[in-house]
Length: 183
Image 1: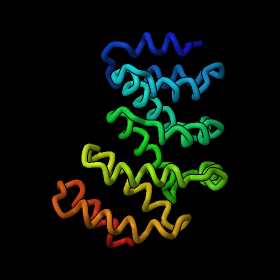
Image 2 (image 1 turned 120 degrees about the vertical axis):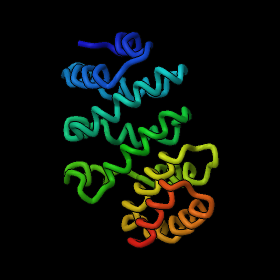
Image 3 (image 1 turned 45 degrees about the vertical axis):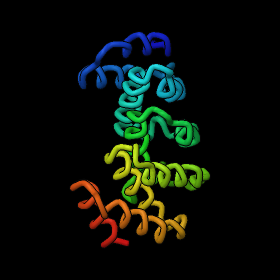
Image 4 (image 1 turned 90 degrees about the vertical axis):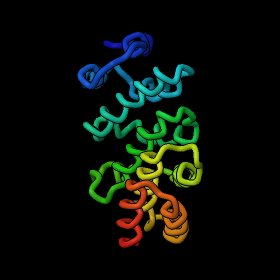
């Protein structure tokens, strides 16, 4: 069994994709709580937090059913994400779990969770000029996925996308055009 302290020790140095995959598999041990990994993504050392967030993304998106019991806890912590590098991983997870093609168990669990704080956070990330483009793209897609649950998102998202596209990068322009066409 890998403890939170052992995980922090293992990710204190540079790790590659192979190590991420190995650690993601180790976290599947029944004794390891995903909540511990989520908590490590808020570690004061931004490098440790970033590596933990990468492992979280990999573990959660590889086997979302296994971690469904921790979904509410993960979503409840999104407003607390401060490290720039971790925002990307959380936004990407939200984009995937809100996707219409997400597993029914995940969709049902999300219906039981108040996602308004997460929606607000995604809009905050889109508006913040310091937030990286990938975060904005993932956040906009997550918001798009939630537009039927919260109908007010549609108009606000369209406005934000138009604003971002004014001086947008190719990634924002491409995703913006796609989302606006679908809206």
